[in-house]
Amino acid sequence: MSSSAPVLQVRGLKKTFITPFRRLRVPALKKIDFQINAGEITGFLGANGAGKTTTIKCLLELAFPDEGEITYFGQKGLSLEAKARIGFLPERPYFYEHLTGLEFLQFYGQLSGRIRGVDLRRRAEELLERVKLQHAGTRPLRGYSKGMLQRIGIAQALIHRPDFVILDEPMTGLDPDGRFEVREIIREVAKQGTAVFFSSHLLPDAEQLCRRLVIVKKGEMVFEGGTHELLDQVQRGWLIHWRSPENPNELKSETVADLVNLQVQIDAVRKRGGQIEDVTRVRASLEEIFMKIGFEDSALLKSQQGRSPEVVR
Amino acid sequence: MFQSVYVIARNTFREVIRDRILYGLAVFGVMLVMFALALGQLSFSDHVRLTANFGFTAIHISSAILSIFIGSTLVSREIEKQTILTLLARPISRTQFILGKAMGLMGVILCVDLGLALILALILAGIDFEFSVNFGVAMFGVLIEALLLVSLTLFYGTFAKPFMTVVFSAASFLLGHWISSLDFFVEKSQSEGFRIVGGLLMRAVPNLEAFNWRSAPVYNLQVAPGEVLVALFYGLAWSLILLSATSIIFRRRDFV
Ligand SMILES: Nc1ncnc2c1ncn2[C@@H]1O[C@H](COP(=O)(O)OP(=O)(O)OP(=O)(O)O)[C@@H](O)[C@H]1O
Ligand SMILES: [Mg+2]
Image 1 (cartoon, each protein chain N blue to C red):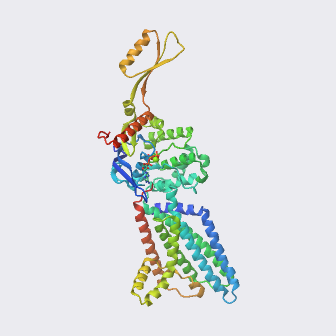
Image 2 (image 1 turned 135 degrees about the vertical axis):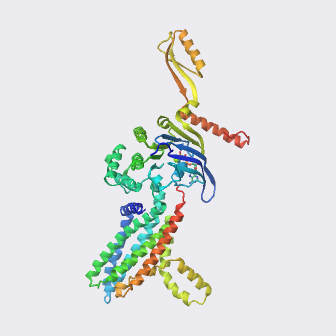
Image 3 (image 1 turned 135 degrees about the horizontal axis):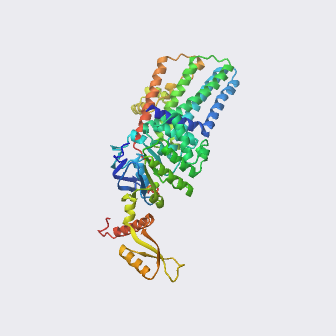
C-alpha cells in the first residue's frame, strides 16, 4: 500500500433524513470534511446523536449522502476493490446467530475474497485467540454475551487483514479488561500498518490511542487535527506541588495561569524555604472540551432564537 | 461475481436449515404427503390415482408455503437484525446479495421437495404405481414455480412488512393458478372493459398453471418437451424480471 495517498478523504458530506409518515426533515450531517492517513489511528468523537454512525454508514454506502465526495485510497467512490481492503464493526453487534464463532469468521473471510482455505482457517483461529474467544469458537453466536459479540465483531473486521478498519464504538459494552484488550488490538493493528478510524464518546480512550481526532457536533465538524494540538489549545496553566518548612507533612498545591506566574510562584516558595515537589502542565481533558463545546452550543441555540447575527462559529 | 453469490447462498442455506421454522413446515409437508396414503385407502376404485394426485398436490402446496413463508423474512430479517450492515460492507453488490439469498433458499426448497418426492415415491411404489419420466417432469414444474414464488416474495419484501408480503404472495399464488381459467372467460366475454382488465391481469400476474404437469404422472399423459422448455423460459424470465426489480429497488436504499 502506498503510504502517500490518504486512506480516506471526505469532502462536504451532507445527509438529511426524512422521517416516514410525518415527513420531517432531520439534518443529520451538515458538512463533514476530514481525512484519514495510512497507518494512523484516528478517533471520531461526538456526543449522542452528533452524526458519527450516520457518517460511517455514508462512508460504506450503507446510507447514501445527499452531497459530498468520498475518496478511498486515492480513488473516487467506494469500489468493490476498495471494500475488499476495509474492515467494519457496526455500532450494535448483531450477527448471524446460527453460525458458530469460527464459521462466522470464515464466512466473512470468504466474502472478502482476499483470504481462503487453510490460511483463512488459521487466521480465524488466531483472531479468536486474540479476542480471547478460543473456548467459544465452536459455539453458535446465539449463546454469546454482548461483550463476546463485540469481540467477535472486532475479529470479523480484521479477518481479511484490511488496510483500513472502521469501528463504530468498539469499546461500548465491554468491561475494563475488554476495553484494555481492544485498545491493545487497535494499537497492534496500527503498528502493522492498518489505518484505524473509530468512534467513541469514551474520551480517555481516544486521548490515549489517537494521534488524530475528528470531532463532530450536531452534524458539523468542529475539529480535525492532532490530539496534542487540540489539547495544547486548551492549555490551562501549571500545577505546582510543594511543601512549606513549617508543615512538611502537608503537600500544598496551586495552579498558575501562565509561565510568568509560574516563575513568580516558584520563587516565592523557594524564598520561604519551601520545597518544590512537582510541576505539571494542566490541560483540559477532552471531557472538559466537550463540556465547553456543549456550553457554546447552548449559547448558540439561544442567540439563534434571539436572532442575533453573530452566531456563526 | 458468482463466488460471492455462492458464499451468500451457502450461508443462507445454513441459516434456513438451522432455523426451527423450516422443521415445522417440513413436518407439515411430510404429514400432508403421508395423508395421501390414508386418503387412498378410503377409495376402493381408484386409490392409486387418488394417492398420487393428492401426493403431488401436497408437495406443491408445501413447496409454495416454504417459498412464501421463509422468503418473506429472508431479507427483512437481515435488515432488522442489522446483519446486512457487515454483509454489505464487504466487497459484494446488493444484486449479488439478493441473488445469494434467493439461491440459498432455493437450495433448501430443492432439498425439501426432493425429500418429499422420495417419500411420495416410496408410498407409490408400495401401491403398484406405474413410474415414468412424468414423475420428474411434475417435480420440475413444482421447482420452477418455487423459484418464481421466491422471486415474487423477495420483490414484495422490498416494500412490504413480512406479514403483508405473505399476504401479497399468497394472493399472487392463488391468482396465478386461477388466471388460466380467467383466460376462458375473457375470450368469451361480451364486455370490452372486462376483456381489457382481464387481459392486463393475465399479463401482470405470472400464470402458475404453466408449470402444472402434476396430472401427467397420475393419468400417464404425454408432456411435450417443447412445452416444458417454453415453461422453463417463461418461469426464468419472470424470476429474472422480479429479481432485477428487487435489486434495483434495493440498490439505493439506506439502512438506518
Ligand atoms: N433513520 C433516521 N431517521 C431520522 N433521523 C435519523 C435517522 N438516523 C439517525 N437520525 C438522526 O441523525 C442524527 C445523527 O445520528 P447518529 O446515529 O449518526 O448519531 P451518533 O453520533 O452515532 O450517536 P450515538 O453516539 O448515540 O451513536 C441524530 O440526530 C438522529 O436522530
Ligand atoms: Mg452512533
